[in-house]
Image 1 (spheres, helix red, strand yellow):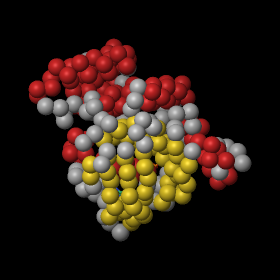
Image 2 (spheres, helix red, strand yellow; image 1 turned 30 degrees about the horizontal axis):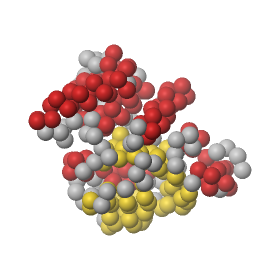
Image 3 (tube, rainbow, N blue to C red; image 1 turned 90 degrees about the vertical axis):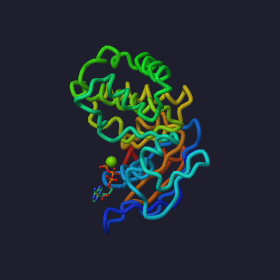
Image 4 (spheres, rainbow, N blue to C red; image 1 turned 90 degrees about the horizontal axis):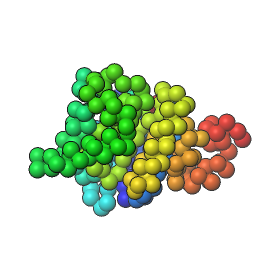
Length: 237
Ligand SMILES: Nc1ncnc2c1ncn2[C@@H]1O[C@H](COP(=O)(O)OP(=O)(O)OP(=O)(O)O)[C@@H](O)[C@H]1O
Ligand SMILES: [Mg+2]
């Protein structure tokens, strides 16, 4: 459903993506692994339209997304949960959710209110904290809020950039349980992770990004059999 072709993105003279191609299938969890500085966030920013690629194309469900800019890409159905959550700290939980629905028209007010109720059902902690400033939430709660805010745009694919980073193991388990549940409910997900062991619990297909290039792609079984990945990511080999 999401098709990325030969994407090159630079910061000035530095090429952070050097021709990245990948596919994310409908209904699947596709995982991108890669070390610090590999270009994972650059890839997420380019797909979401926050950065413009030098060359290459991105399409979602046969719609061209290349060069459209972030608001239009969000309207076309691609939503990003950014690295480090980036909730609006001074806005309440409720206001953060409302902000996530900015792509919906005024006529959709009833639907938006309904969607917020659905988020409160899925994430009861957000309901309990609905009138608190988002900056007062714990890291795990902020991750849930960032995820719920992204879902408010009713995406057809959800991108998540390292949702487990900086969270305690118990909270990471909770986040991955939510990712699994969302996927079982039909959401297509492109997940950036460095925790390969956790990613193996949810992902259907893997790409390894290293120094701006895809250096491996394969199924979970192929990933577990790859010697380089075993050494670097799975603590074995
Ligand atoms: N704003 C920027 N200006 C210049 N170079 C940048 C900028 N942001 C990232 N880079 C460089 O681009 C490369 C890819 O960075 P990126 O943040 O995409 O990596 P990442 O895989 O997300 O890393 P991490 O796992 O640490 O989040 C790195 O070499 C980084 O130093
Ligand atoms: Mg990153």
